[in-house]
Image 1 (cartoon, rainbow, N blue to C red):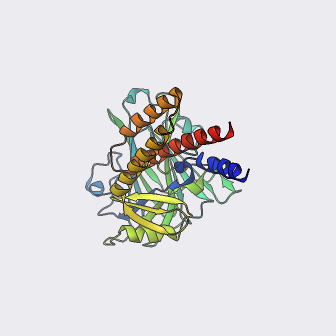
Image 2: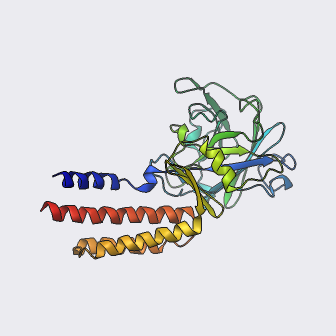
Length: 344
């Protein structure tokens, strides 16, 4: 009986996919501006030319989100006065975007195609300042102090925004003075942040720049690191920064490295190597299930999983997560088969 209970508990643990247990972090390095961007909504002046672009977005408001369905990107830079943000909202059907709200601070602003930007300078995951902008450049803002106090009537005094609409996208160019963000960061400081985008071309679709981050989940915001002009950042430095500011388990892909902390210590490994290992693990798990001589229905499921694995070819984090998830499904199938055989 003890062996059966142990096996049953193991099955319950395996039933939770890896991606639902481990947070995929968003980390963006903000560097000083070479010059103040011209706020015209076009994002084509020299100030933006070499600013890194963040384009990893996730499905909005899901506990285990997949890749976002709205192609979006943001970039940031800063100077003594404040923070500059540029956003590109790609859209194939620009004639269908919603542009119904024209009044500042209208609570219905989120029902237009829009962006919401959340800043948490304390990185405490309880409060934030939120700025909303639709494609017409109509603005809204509010502040949340903690878990209970919401200042819906708060308004920033100096933030500015311009938008532009093009054939295949609409852009946002914004400036936020440090006063509106609550304070000026020191070099080396870490803030929490998330950008969410709402689109209405084909019914509501939302995306988030951090996995699970949004209005109701400030603990799932991503991170902004304010670097010095010539500061050199490597994976080890980033690992040390995050280890002191966030809780395990988590992982982050930076360049060709995978940084992870699964509860013990922070590790850095090559992303290409990790993807190869994940593929080998999947193939091993697939063979183990096939050797159990599964029924016809299970064989069809195995063919589906095998075909899905072939779609993951890039040596990136999404491939690693996808292969891990497929391996988890195979492990569940294996233990389900063994438990059913033993309980008959």
